[in-house]
Length: 317
Image (cartoon, rainbow, N blue to C red; front, top):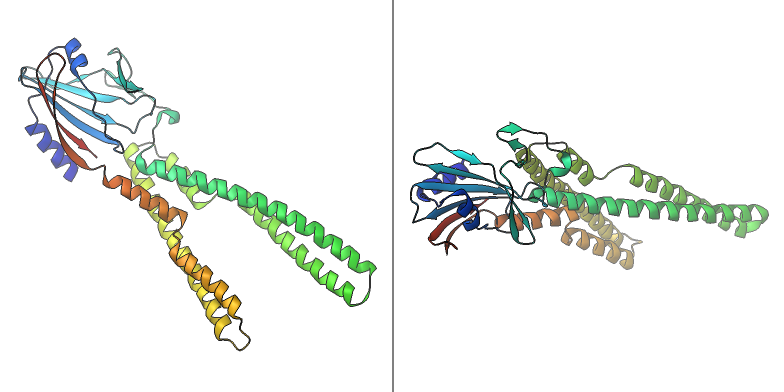
């Protein structure tokens, strides 16, 4: 609601806008981009042409290869008219296309299907995507390490058990015990590695859920909620492990048969868990920092190539 009110206020106070004719209009127009913002509402005015009003809405939520914006023009004697022209920003240059070109689903008011590849990612979705990719990479790496380490432990354990059967006495008992421990560790490593490779992480599942949403606004809100939820879960998890390690440290320190070295090790793990934020928390924090600079209102003043003064308000949201 707040954005709608600001939008209406800007629209009222930024008229009249410049628009001389279709050819000079496209040449005089200059694109204003603000890094980090998903949407831009921009109003332009030409003092020499007070009868024409023009503004556009530019969105980065669409494909990065084709960054379109809708241009709306009004004249005192006509209603609002949607100009079916788009500009693709490629290498900092504006390439204007024919008015019959498709504007991402709207061609003379006709809706067209948009493939999933053409859907762009919002700021929150981009952070969620990178978090999911890193989580998947870590999961795969851990899974392969578990499988390889588990296989090595199984092989060594089997060799020790086989050697223990051929020998006798206490030496055979020690080898048998060590072999059983290695076999158990190997089974645990293989099972853990298999599960890690087979089961997606929480970030991956959240990102898959977001990809199933077609509406850009819903995708943005779902991505924001997923980042917040993952950060909260990561915080609870590290606090739990920090408390658990602190408990083991206290138990090792104050018990009768305690060890100062073991207490120090568990104490260090507790401090690490309390101080080191999880990957999801760091991702959500970076996302919020970047999002803070999106909601801003700016005033622009410039000279057009064909004469006239250009006055503009830019609202990035």
